[in-house]
Image 1 (cartoon, helix red, strand yellow):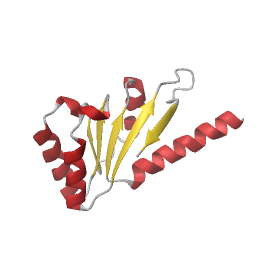
Image 2: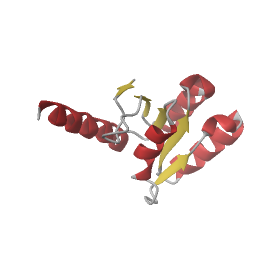
Image 3: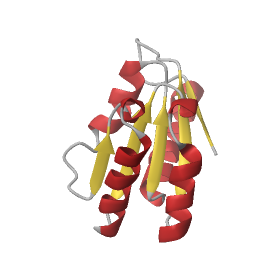
Length: 122
C-alpha cells in the first residue's frame, strides 16, 4: 500500500512538472520510459513533441522551439542524455521568450508496473 501511494505521488509530481513548465527536456536511456511519458501528450495540439531531438542540429531545434513558443505551445524535447542537446541555447531562448525550462531525467524502467523507477528534475 505504501509503495503504491509513493508511486502515485511521484507520478502526480512528474505530471505537475510537465504541466507547469513551458519547455521540458526529457531524457532517459530507456526508450520505454520516454514513450510512457510522452504518450499522454501525443494528441494534445498545445504541445510540440520533438522526439530524438539530439539527432537534429542546434538551429533546427531552436527554430522548432521558437516557432512553438510563439504559438503559445509547450515544447517537450527528448534525448537519451541531456549532454546531447544544446541546453545553453535552449535556456537562452527560454530567457528571451520569458518561458520556463525544466530538465527531467527518467531513471530506469519497472517492466512489471510499467513505470519509471524514479526521476530527477532541475
